[in-house]
Length: 160
Image (spheres, helix red, strand yellow):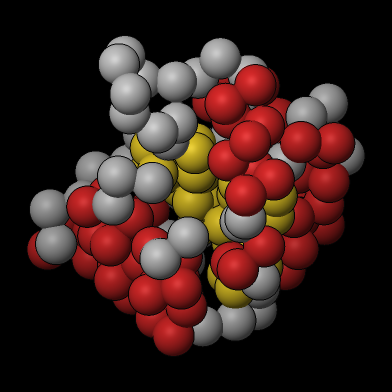
């Protein structure tokens, strides 16, 4: 759950030297990964809340499953993605989709080095994203939030 972000992560961020200049608190690097239009709709509130928060530095990665529909939802709220995996191909099987997500998410995790990854838990692609995070080289310091209801948890994320 999102509430897994606690003082341990904050302390890891402090030890990792990711402090802002002066006496500012370290910002946790959060990576939100989504791919479908329903996920985008559910995540809008969470994304906006986390972006306003001084607790997080937020990155948004799209899998590219519903590319045009997700872009439409996000642009309505002025949200821009940082990465797009562009995994969709014609006549793609669920196995192929899962493999592509696993393969293409790895470099994003290496580049962004998030402290927490947030995914919507209800889809096969979300399971693939979670699996990739759990097998990443940073897995010992990475919190994974599998979110059933981002809207219900948004206030808890921000109050950390």
